[in-house]
Amino acid sequence: MIQPVKEKIILGIDPGTTIMGYGVLRVQGTKPEMIAMGIIDLRKMGDHYLKLRHIHERVLSIIESYLPDELAIEAPFFGKNVQSMLKLGRAQGVAMAAALSRDIPITEYAPLKIKMAITGNGQASKEQVADMLQRMLHFAKEDMPTFMDATDGLAAAYCHFLQMGRPTVEKGYHGWKDFIAKNPDKVKR
Image 1 (cartoon, one colour):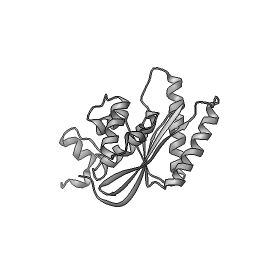
Image 2: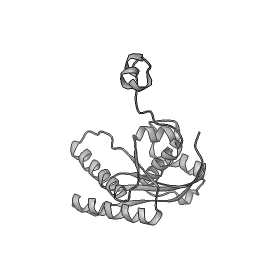
Image 3: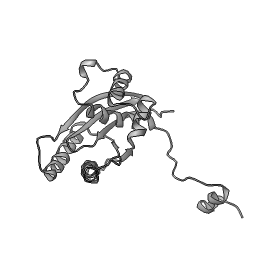
Image 4: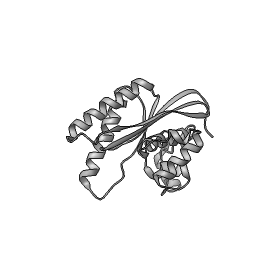
């Protein structure tokens, strides 16, 4: 069950080195509302380091505009190209550093988990995710962005909203012996 809050702003980011998507949700009580979504367009920038600086500046600007309480960011998934993966990880890291510089807590979500939370299908397409968000958050078809990276950022924020009030399991146990070994203070001898 989602725990009601007075108000919480969640910034969601879909990291990218060509186009980075973001979405901002306001949660009042248990009701989410989309207040912004967009992209950081990096296509015209050739130098990777200039892209990273631009990501940092734009994420800080978004943070200053919307004052999010929390950041939900999509975790990079392993692709075939190691160099692309490295660049994507750097882009994600720079966005995270911007949030950390403003003391904003960060939660990472795997792409499969985000898609599963939004559509019920971990293999859903970007279009299916966007369509479900449009239905759940009740925004007009005309407000649907050209680049699905924006709705992917919003999806990360919405996934985080759905996790509100759900405790995260810190420890996994493999039987009673493992439980006792990891929790000696909880066992009377």
